Image (cartoon, rainbow, N blue to C red):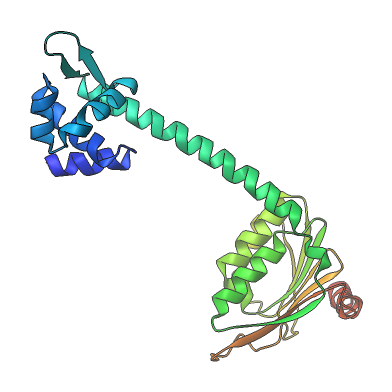
Length: 244
């Protein structure tokens, strides 16, 4: 039990010596520094600094006298203080992360990318990269799907796109697949045999699977092509089938 409390206190951002000292005071309630040092196995040269730190955190009360003693606050109160401090730290950390996201995003202009061919060993890696690209859509996404339609990554990306008011249209090859998730979130769908896994983002960027995703392969190739000359041709092919 004592070991479990010690580990929990460390997770609540107390140091090794602070955790041992507070854990010991949970048992002793009130004691002089030398006895606390001995019981907690904290060096005498450090125990006063540790106790002063715990007093500053509101976890321990210093009782004046000769010699002075140290008393634990109500244990439930001590744990509440530590938990609230942890929550506040996580809140600040989350804000730092959000600020960093904005800074990093502002330094990367994805539209500067031209053509690149990528190779991955797992289809899931392709789907993760595709999800990243689709999250940058601002106005429109038109998709030719076969196997990718079943992946959660595509479901998430297109759902988020619709939440950003991006216009999403899909030509899907297999009319027997369950596409209710997409329909629920406002993706427009028509069924056409086409044999492609292709995604046109904002009428300028093309993400195209070059390998057959229906087959197991040691590696898969795909291209991400900004301002691709293939976009108008594929968009025309899409609209032709969409309007039929």
